[in-house]
Length: 167
Image (tube, rainbow, N blue to C red; front, side, top):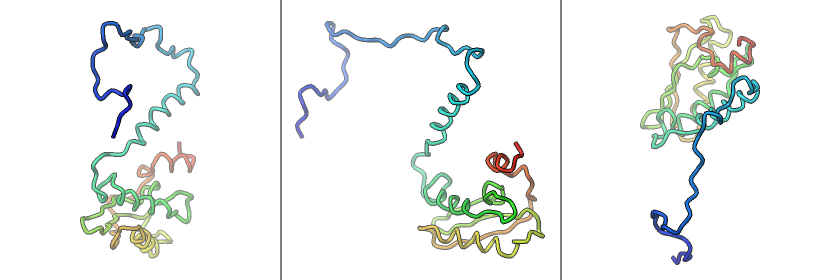
């Protein structure tokens, strides 16, 4: 493959006759004055930082490990199941305690319900099992229904609390 003559294959120190443009040094005067920055500007600055940080995916993660494609696909499937009485998905509601995907691509979901007398106590675990098993790449799914630790509003994600007006 022929490279254009102006493309360098290495990085070298500049020649003595080459002009180097150095970046401007940071100065205290450049800092954002908290009194002059509006709340919206501050929120936007924080949001930009967080979006970039949260969008970064872990590197070299096996598909079944947390952060892996298969594991995340199972969680995404579970987020499509909504509690019939509350307009929040069961994952953000905090009903899913753990999701594991083993080496044989079997999903094991540990979950609870809001109360043992929940109206969907007989159907919800079956729906979770079917939804997890329907994820492409998952061979089989199993649901372990537990009552300890008991579910409480503290298990809800911030998104769920916001949706329910609890923040």
